[in-house]
Image 1 (cartoon, rainbow, N blue to C red):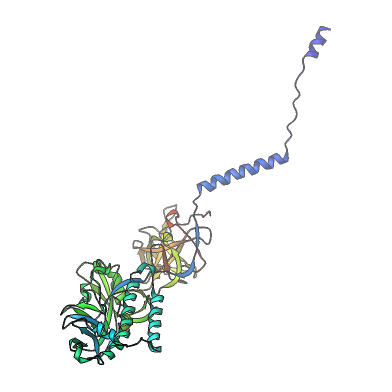
Image 2: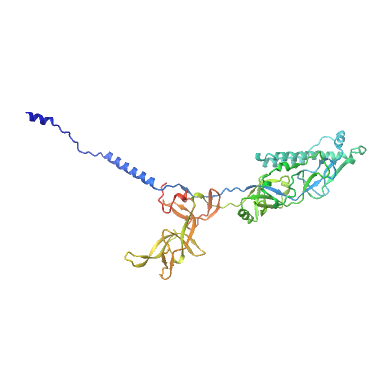
Length: 473
């Protein structure tokens, strides 16, 4: 009885048989796959693709230059109050009246005693005002606010000139017994030229004397002096100046002697003047002045009168920018290749593949030859040599012609500039021909053999990619 009780007290735990759940199994497989993919992803090189597009470089061709003209300052021959009759920017002939000098200052008092009436502007005179104000408004820039004062003085002289024309007609009616007519001197232009009523000390400046300080307008406003009507001048003081030649030039700074030589080679450059959007062709000459900087002289044979009131001008060089495929500079890389004479290569097709007959040693030690496939990246037509990827050949490899007679020892190397094409999911070097370049982008030739085409994908950063690398985006 006791034995039976002992057996009843010995209870064993029941073990359930292993029951695999198909859902859990699938989840485990997926989890393992994801982990493996993550590990592979972290161990594989990554890069950003860039799609090649057509374009051009937005190069800055805007410069500020100094105007050089044939200018002659005309001084007063007697002291007195000066009143001008020729307009600013007006062309006068030799012996044309430019201004009068009232030696006593009594002329204004005498004229006030006459009832000379009010000045009425003609349609022609009103048109001149409108044209001058329209040109100023079109070329005005807040960055150059000082030009407002130039325009103010120009308009002031024009108004006084119109008033003085009426006054000049009245001088002859003044009673000569007053003695006023005897102390009014009429001054005439010594030669033909365009009149200006300002001086700045640069009237005799030569192109080879231009310096960086001059172009930066250092102390320029202190040097510039406006010549206004009804101003008291001493004898031999500057009364006005004449620009006597239609030929004139603008001197601009350039970045380097190479840039100066490049622009000089153009011969003539089309220039747009930002003041009024006028365009003109200028003859180009490179200057290397004494301050060690580099300059360009643009010479013109027309429109001098349009800018006779300006010493400094903002201009834009209308150059023909290169067009082609636009790529970032970060994608460009240099790569070394072997140079192989074309008679030792058999082209497979236009895809850049070929064959060479190379000597090699078998496992048994026998020396023989065998065809090996290679990739071609460029062809030098002058030397009749192909650029072959160095991964396919080694230095001192011996190549044979197809007839097996002559041989060539691989040794000669050269470098090509290119990018990594990733159209097929791996990095494939493609040679490029750079047409122009700035700090960020380059323009390269399109549709070249062994080169790039529009809509190709390239590696944005060439330094992070190596040849034949599998690409993960």
